[in-house]
Amino acid sequence: MLSELSRIIDQISRDKGINRQLLVDGLEEAVMQAARKKFGQRRDMEVRFNEELGEIELFQFRTVVDVVQDDQTEITLDDAQALDPDVELGDDLGSKMPDVADLGRIAAQSAKQVIIQKMKEAESDVVYEMYKDRQGEIVNGIVQRFERGNIIVNLGRTDAILPASQQMPRRSYRQGDRIRAYLLEVKHTSKESPLVLSRTDDRFLTKLFTEEVPEIAEGVVKIMGVCREPGSRAKIAVSSSESDVDPVGACVGMKGSRVQNVVQELQGEKIDIVPWSPDPARFVSNALAPAQISMVVVDEEKKTLVVIAPDDQLSLAIGRQGQNVRLASKLLGWNIGVKGESKYAKSMEEGYKSLLVVAGVDEKLADKLYDAGYASAAELAEVEAGELAELLGGDLERAQAIIAAAAAVPVPEETAGDEEGNRSEESPAASE
Image (cartoon, rainbow, N blue to C red; front, top):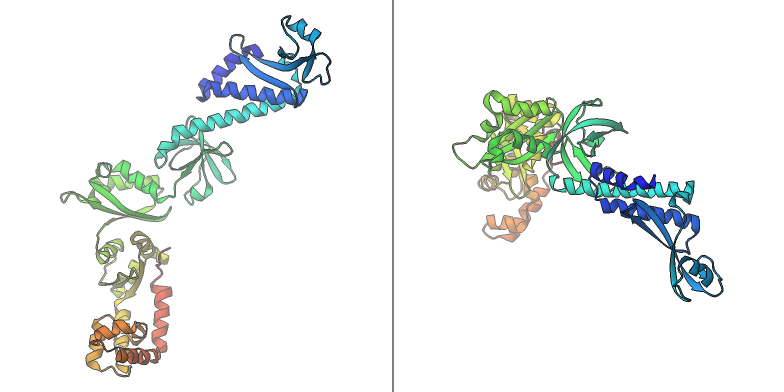
């Protein structure tokens, strides 16, 4: 068997793509561990792979002495000269030990485990080097087997794992099915699968469109944002660097062919392609399509948007279980609240009336406050005195008195109920 080692090493090196010297080093280390288990730890031993003979050779080194006190580290002069006539006292003599194959069953098993581990480590290095620059790409594979909800995917020369958390909901696979996925992570480890895949990551959608739309690959059309609820619905914002190229049309394709190819790959996930805009009001209007939007109130500082929609468009803007506005919120990175026109108008009217109740505020000042963005006594009560003083010509004392008076104005129960309803029923979107 040992005489066949060279052939076996060459075959493994070729089949697994593992450096031959790594296998030789691993084999030598394995035999050394096995030898130490059989002959003890104190012996000075050395393992060498003889390339010419294709054999593993084990040598021990002992000091030549007159009287042996430790037979593991010493040898008498007579015994030493029987091996090498030129040896002298005090020399270190190396001698070949019995056939490595005689190390014993337990030692051989230990050697086998070390060799297997070395092969795993070497194979892990090969896989890492092969795929480290491909992280973030789409890879193709075949479903190999299933482990605790995870799918093991064969990519050709190695396997990857598609964790249960990265799988599309309501989609089952069978052994042998072809599968495409996003290469989420390339780990440098031999203890687990070094390649982690995903079909739910937002970047999977980005890559699919990049493959389907030449204008994106060429950089003419740019993807400005993506958000998904995998298996259900997604939104992708696109812009064009050339005025004569319609970014949405490019992504849709002739008769919808391009977007349909992506939808088919994602098992029917609905995809909204949204024209990007630097204006958050216009952008949110695009993102909430096909719902019509009447008005958008923008708060740049708090990154919040209040979207006003016609009453008959309200449910369309919000979407089923709040999905449409929730995805729009993720796409923009802003908090979005949606209100119907009638309820918004009512809240504005009640807010203006509450300003007139504040002590020290007449109709002229109420108009001024309302136009400045203080739409109710409750909002006025939260403003900084210095900020309000600027509006009042620098009168800080008057500003403080008005803020205190505004804080004393009770919030009508009906208004409070409306606000609570807006938060829970009409405005389910907050950045998640």
